[in-house]
Length: 72
Image (cartoon, rainbow, N blue to C red; front, side, top):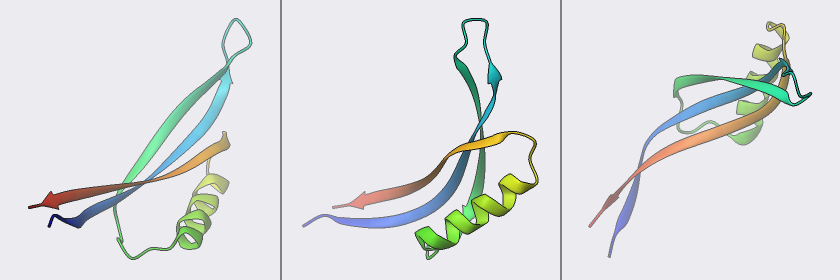
């Protein structure tokens, strides 16, 4: 039976930085590596809000990206 081994976690913040010529929003993302694997969703959201306060642009989305190795 295969097993999954969590290798790492990254926190990705997506900011709305403005509008293009057609009125569509422009997004830029910032990714933070080496996030504790044990971090809860609430902890990551609190960290994202704290970081967003320091930025000039509006926070649009917060993502958690886990990397998993599948072992046979």
